[in-house]
Image 1 (cartoon, helix red, strand yellow):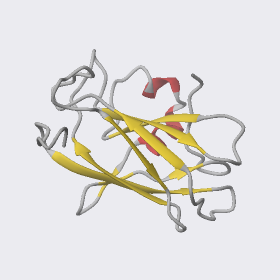
Image 2 (tube, one colour):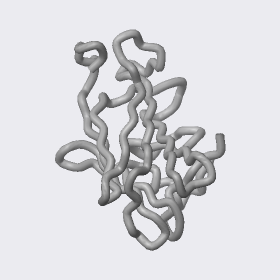
Image 3 (tube, helix red, strand yellow):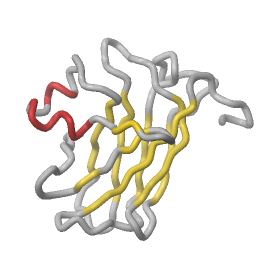
Image 4 (tube, one colour):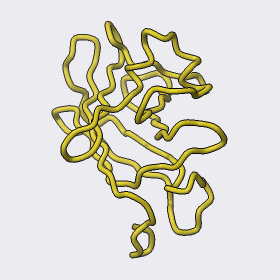
Length: 142
């Protein structure tokens, strides 16, 4: 919602869990997302395109948004930024809804691309983020 108005597009829920090297959850991680609206616009007057949440004691975060449209030949995606007191820098990654042709996705080795694809659930999409270790989420430099 923006100023009490419902944003156009398919409503979705995006949630996940943020864990560290040993699989333990991280609480109080600030998770920011930004995305295009359902028409693929970042500058839409009827959609903010940005949100912030903090993980709980189980490392869980949750957002309600709309399914983003495609932008400039890119697959539908949501950008993520993580901030945490134990990190020395911000971490940026991207959540995709499917594998396909996308220059940002193709910057990741083929065997690791699946780590950037959300899993469809009964309530929306789940995107778990692992900070280090085996199956670490690919992160991008700014």
